[in-house]
Image 1 (cartoon, helix red, strand yellow):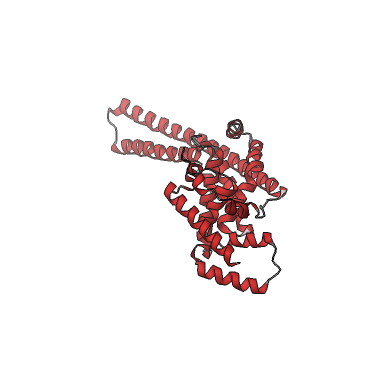
Image 2: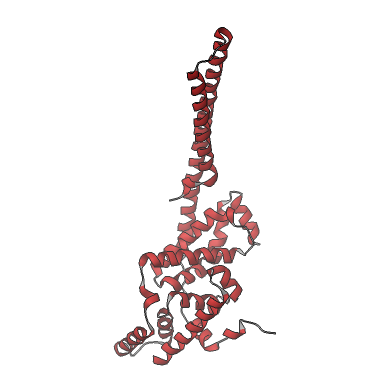
Length: 117
Length: 174
């Protein structure tokens, strides 16, 4: 059966290649690399936890603002039976901004772009 | 076996990654050295490749072996570094190689056999050197080399033919 590897069987070349000094990395390489990985990992966890905390505070603030605007609009509706255009625009803008910033947070947390050098 | 370590690393056990460093550090270093031909840069590239592998382990879909996936990272990083360094291995012509060898023959007549072999391999261009490293030293199949380098089968065969021819020619002239 044809074996394409046989086509390149070459004892002369193999002999030359095998006689080359194989380079070896020192034990320190592993130690240093593991230290770097540990540091990076700690940094990553630290940033991720700060981001989560920040996202939590941001969402709380947004919920409070939305609640405030909704209560204001509904109380105005109860008294005057009308809603000002400004209130509607404010509500709309707050919702859009909150969606944008929340998606940005989740992008940071999920795609780990903060870990890049 | 490796799947167990991969799962451990993904689940947060950083120390499990040292298994991969221990297993592949020298082979990765030799692959990188075959391309860059500079020990210091090859070591840096090996380190970067391990970092990339660690950060991207979650994305490793296990259709190929960890070894192929990781070697591909090493190869890509090495060529990237080679481009950055603008090392001119790939543009040294056979004639220039022969001239260099002749000059060194005059300078150093007491060269040992191992040194001579080392020198012959160091005169190959990055792709040829990588092909020799993967096929003859790491004893990988052509299919594995396809996965690692991203070159086509036909291209690998051409590079291997050319590398063998270059080695014979350089060796003959020494």
